[in-house]
Length: 160
Image 1 (tube, helix red, strand yellow):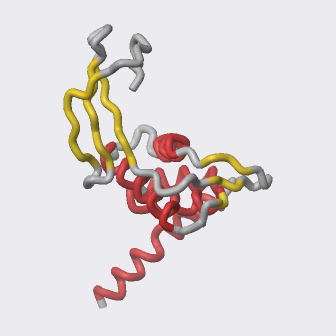
Image 2: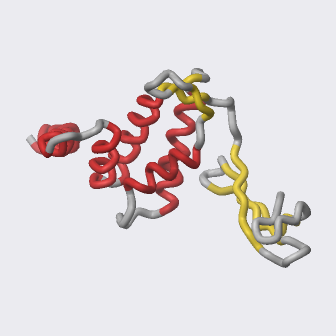
Image 3: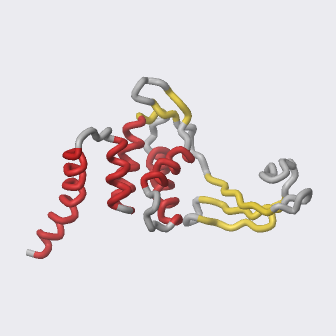
C-alpha cells in the first residue's frame, strides 16, 4: 500500500481487525520512510457493477460517489458516521446481491432514498429534492406527506 504522505510503496501493517460487522477489515499502517500512520479498509467486492445513466452511458459503480451523495444529504445533521457507513454498505450489498451487473442510476437513487428514510428525515427530503428534481414547493409537501404515511398509519392502526 502506498503511503499517502511520502508516496513510498513500502508500508507495514501494524494492526488488523474486523469492522462493520465483519464485512470489512480495518488495517492500521505505518510508513518506514516518513513514519506516517494511516488506516485502510479492505472490502469484498462480489462483482464489478456498472451504472447505466439516464443518457444510456455506462460507468463503473463508485462506492465513494454514493457515500459522498449520502454525506451531502446529511450535511450538518447529527448522524453517527458508523450508521452512515452501515447504510451505504447495505445499499452496496443489495446491488451486488441483485444478480445484475448493470444497475440503472434510478435504482441506486431509490435505494439511497430508502436508506436515508431510516436514517434522517431531513436528509431524505434533501436527497429526494435532487433525485426527483423538485421544481416547486409543492414537491416538498408531497415528499413530506410520503414520509409520514407508512409509519403513522401503521402506528395509528396499532393504537386502535
